Image 1 (cartoon, one colour):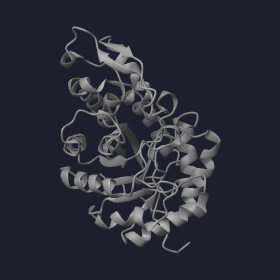
Image 2: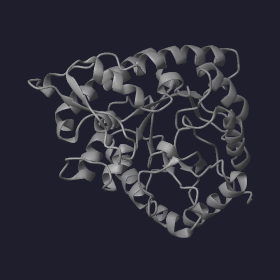
Image 3: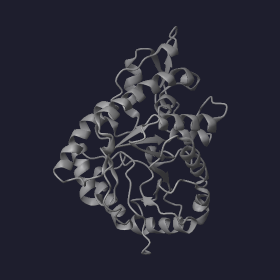
Image 4: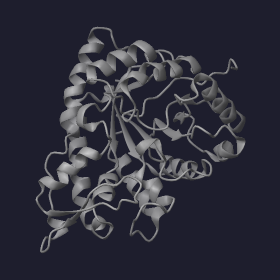
Length: 350
């Protein structure tokens, strides 16, 4: 491997260990000097990303449940508004994100006081875009009517998190996966201009995060059953959305994470990275760490990326780790550490 190692690593969210404290301790011991922020691992009911949000739709008692399409990418039950229900009047209760984040932050803060987590590292909260659970669980015809109520509920929980965690310790990541299914034409959606609708939403929710709280985006092609909903031809759609979001949000974007499929160490996949126009201060993380081919395969993908761009980048996996066997996590973390260089001591904002 060249001495020009990627600088730092990033965890997109889920880490399938027993609880948030175990995640913080495990991650810090292996990757503490590679990370600028640490998620709580989305343990428990959050392990399968948005799967647990079906309970939030059921709890409104305003929907009927219909069977999923068995041919869909990730077959999930569909909710349709009951006869006579005005979808615009649906209100959601607790979604679970704020409660989980506040409980995890207490563990994070305690471990930081003990010196188990480095000073200056931020507490990362990864959230799905509001569109994701709605598009996943609601019949396509009803999505436009139901989405505003769910978005309001999720942003209210984000506001709770922002109020509970000191801003200088907080980082918010929006996970955009369903959107790329729509952009690739494999996720049913009733939007007329899909790109514009996707970007409007990504910019709007980014602007909701205060400027003194870090903001990042994880752009993703899905990981259900360790399969993408469509194999990307190259990184071009990801670059297009990354550029548009970074220029559209009216505040700094601290990082963007892009996926790299395991079998893509070819120049064709990475070539569109030459069109990436992120500000110099926005960190780029490439999700090219894969367990199946370990350090050797990861280094091949790093070298291919370095042939395409000369800007610094760090390493990540394509997606969160929640669908993986827990006993594989230590090795995955070690791969991150072996192929990357330390980031240096984070500076505490005031």
